[in-house]
Image 1 (cartoon, rainbow, N blue to C red):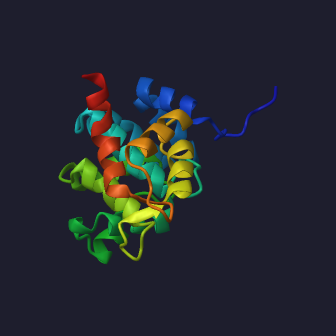
Image 2: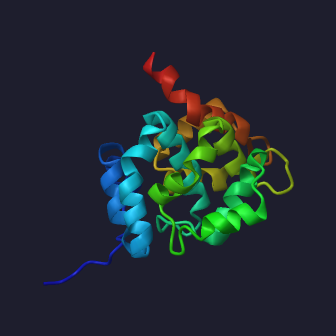
Length: 200
């Protein structure tokens, strides 16, 4: 019998379907690459960590996590983790605390492990602010804008949420300026509130 690669590449729709229908099983499957200690910890904490948040909060934190997952393999490494906490600047995590927490997951960190390790700190963070700070990682100069083509690529390939049509509709509502830059604060508002308006 042939064995598939342990982490096959999946389309955004497939990932979205799995994420909506089976959050805990995803955590169990995706954590295979992590050491046994981390796997056992993640599986044991699945129900607890996910019960800390509402479904919408989990989805929004997943958005932020996915943006941090630069190589799109479903994991963030230790450097990505430091960047994540830097983006969540108001949490004010000390370097010593971060090093101590990193010891808890000596291997690759997937979304379930991420929530398990940092759920308590993330619980007090506003999801909209979390996503906004994640975008700020790509805006080191603090201009408040990002290139339209970059945002379109990010939203359609990483965020597991926007189709090409939805992305174009969003840019129609909030068109880029003459230089092709988009105010990502408006973008974050759409991500966190737009669907609620659509359902009314």
